Length: 250
Length: 250
Image (cartoon, rainbow over all chains, first blue to last red; front, side, top):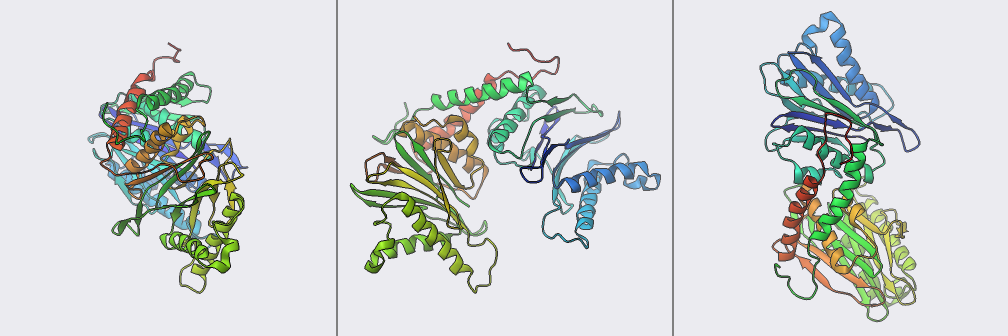
């Protein structure tokens, strides 16, 4: 499995992805699931991937190759005019990759499925964020729906729902994402350290600060340990239930 | 879907279940998923169910009918000598129910699957807690693995992992379960209020206090609102990430 989050803030976009990949529990490896393409001053596109590693790597490989072959420039990540077109290009690539993998092979069903989060900015547009399905279609983040999760998304959702605010600073968003990832890491072996983090600041039109949080990173350790402590304090701060009577506010 | 938790404490057992049942999003109803059988002074058995409602109601119906027919007394929930035997009886009933549902019918696959949590005490034994699979086999809670969740279990797991302690009072356990359920309710429409809560106190050998938390219950509202506030305070209590330098402990 995998866990990735892309989040829209007033100040821009933030992305985080884990690096665990596994085929069963006895075949575990570490792989980067965050890819970026940039033309400084013109565009920045970041892609997060979850699902079958063969599919996600093929999709990224095809996107890279399209860029290298001149005759395909009309369908190149560096040439799309809007992020909507970019999402459609990636969606078509995903759909074609999954269709090819199924074609004539022995496997059926959803074995080759993969989902993607894509975000960034092309000059002349606002920053945008998309969720791309294995079927190749996609949805865009809105004010009501300002973040996307792919992969093992459930453990880390409650804290995002409770603590997300569009006005968060990038520094506070890093903290929020680390807590969400740490809750997932503590509950599910298929999500693993290190974690890749990237910031995109509105109108920068180039890659923002990046950071790989290793398991022994001081700030990650501080958040993980501090959150356990803070959660227990939060738990203790609420009044226990009383069986005696219909409880009254105190 | 469904969300149910059974938890072993030093003082006994606690159970909580939601009441939402749905066939698609436009066919929603409320149903109790917590069943108890007791022989005061001799045994108390509580069962929580998740999965296909036809299966779970058939299992409970068969267990009830076995009790009423005298010739089946040897396979009666009220006659088993240990909770291990009880788990086996329920497991066999689950397996037979699912097998019968598949037999000759048009449906295939896991449509009829259901999982159960069963706990309680029979005189002469300690309180015990079991997780029963659709295949009819089961596992028992241990000190290392002191609670079971069935149904939509992922959203509510992180708080259980962080705040569970075997020494919790029943009153604090009620609070913990309400927080875990509230995190799930806030993230997933297939889990719904009201919530059923039951306590079993070690060696009581009869049903302990029960409570149905309706959505307008004062204590539930207090926990739900208070937890949102406490989580935000906990979040704010941790230092934000700094991009400037490798962070130092402050």
